[in-house]
Image 1 (cartoon, rainbow, N blue to C red):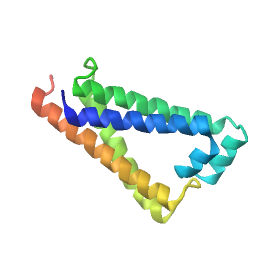
Image 2: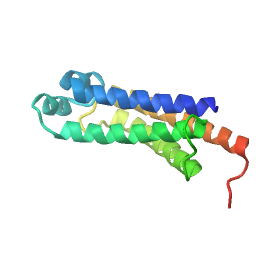
Image 3: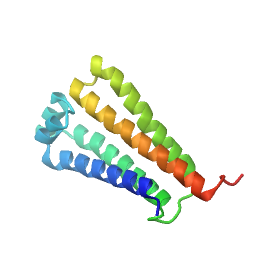
Image 4: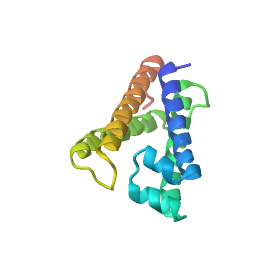
Length: 145
C-alpha cells in the first residue's frame, strides 16, 4: 500500500463529507466554512443553486478520493491513473495559488480567511497527490509507452 496516496484519498473523502454537511445543514455550515453570506442565504431560502454547486464539488472530490485510493493500491488500478493523479495535483496546486491572490482581492463573496485557509488546504492536497504520484512512479517504474 502506498501511504501518501491513501492519506490524500482520505483527505478528499473528508472534504467531500464536509461539503455534504453544508448541503444537509445549510446556511450555518456555509457561513462557518466561509462560502459567503449570499450562498448561506440562498441555502436558507431553499434555493437549489447551493445544493447543485456543492453537489458538483462532492462528486469531484469523491472521484478524486477513488483515484488516490486506486494509486495507493486500496482499490483496483484505474486506467490512466498517473495522468489522473497529475491532473488532480495540478488542479489543487493551481487553485491554491490563485486563491492566495484572492486573499487580498476576495471574489465571489467569500471572505479573505476562506481564501487563505482553502488555498493552504488545496496547496497541501496538491502536494500530497504530487508526492504520491512521484512515489508511485518510482515504485512501478516508467509508464508504458
